[in-house]
Figure 1 (cartoon, rainbow, N blue to C red):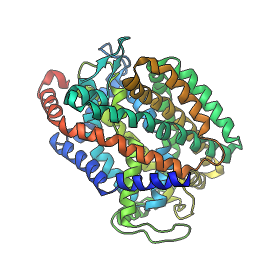
Figure 2 (figure 1 turned 45 degrees about the vertical axis):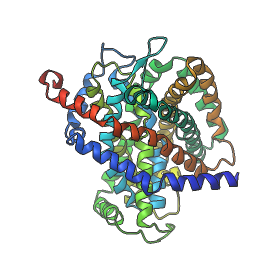
Figure 3 (figure 1 turned 60 degrees about the horizontal axis):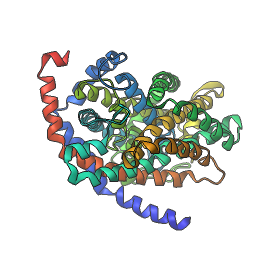
Length: 452
């Protein structure tokens, strides 16, 4: 096992090296300026389209609102709690700055992914709308690029079991055990049973559950975090100073913090930011392809909100709470660090329960959201007959992530590596298909009837 982890570490260092960061950031910047900052400038328009998208009778399987909630259900997860804490633990406070930066340009990436997903989507044998990178690679770039779509589907299918399954169950079982004393394996079986009930109904049930749970869980967690920030308002300027200072300077060792280089701040900030909001990975457009919409640009403006909500709002609150409560140097890591911060920040010890409940809800919705992504990748590779076997394997894998001795650091390492491998085919497709995106976007926003 140690040999396998060592090999994966070598691959991880390669795929998350400077070339990958340049590819991610460079693609985002190219798309941002190619779109003339439309994703950033049209933020409020996107929220208006989201509100209108609660009810839709256009072509698709789920409402635009539920498509975003499904995408958010997969992105708002342990990355917002454990991932942010891990970024600060390894990269120092400056990692937050790089998370923000990759999220701002990631809005353009997410916009473009959803535009292509809707524009090149298909109907399967049962009339359901399917799409995502594997389809816009095949239908947009042509048959000679089919191998690239297959590569994405393989990496997406495998990545789901890390980023969207075992990491989620591992993190939540750890938090529940520390606060409620429940055995991790029991937590795993409970989550597996609940997920099984949802997966019976397919994408429509997933969309309905996500549409109800995601807003509730986000408000619960964000509300608790905002209360802490209000109670420690006088420390926010110092926390912001730490973030901007250490974004460009190494973080010296202090307390239980081992110190961090500038490269660690950049690497872990970007890696955990991408892990959290998934901009560039190509996962979210699989959900947006099922949206009831006749126009890909409208859905693109809805999709980009996922990156804004996930990272600029929720991840920022986690990071600031960790900094204003002065626990970032405690030596704790992952969900334990976030729980310590919330518990320190709120009187009466209620903070740990907010984190535990937040983790439980976030993990549950992430597991059901990623089950859809993994299923569609598997369906692309093996046909619809693979759907039921995939769901069974997916459910069985959930409690496996809670087994004693499961190494969270190794799970994160594998997930990070697969994230990068997913992103490469998707980013290549975004670059080659960018003229299509720019043309559709210009046509949409130059037509007053479409804009309204």
